Image (cartoon, rainbow, N blue to C red; front, top):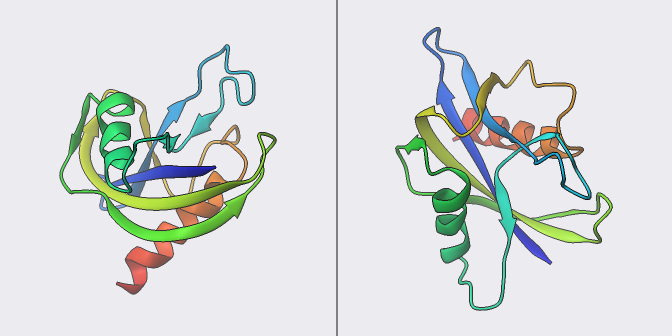
Length: 130
């Protein structure tokens, strides 16, 4: 399986880098009530660009997105209980959101989906180096 992960960032009023996280539903059979990076598995018929656009439309409909999704890595392999998934990590900039909560990248919630902290750190390094 391949997933599109939308790491959505903004600068706080104090200038700190923040990342948007959303909560998984309480009835999620794998990751109930955990904070996570919005994303989705590619489904048959998707193109490499249509899935990121669909994630923005379905998981971030009340987020003010200020950039197109930028693919920054397409080869992070993980397995957190649902089988192996190849993650394509996209960077998205936003200014505000009613879809989740922005957290400073240095102070992520303890109940963050396993491995998503790695994706956030990867994006922080990318932003620092580019």
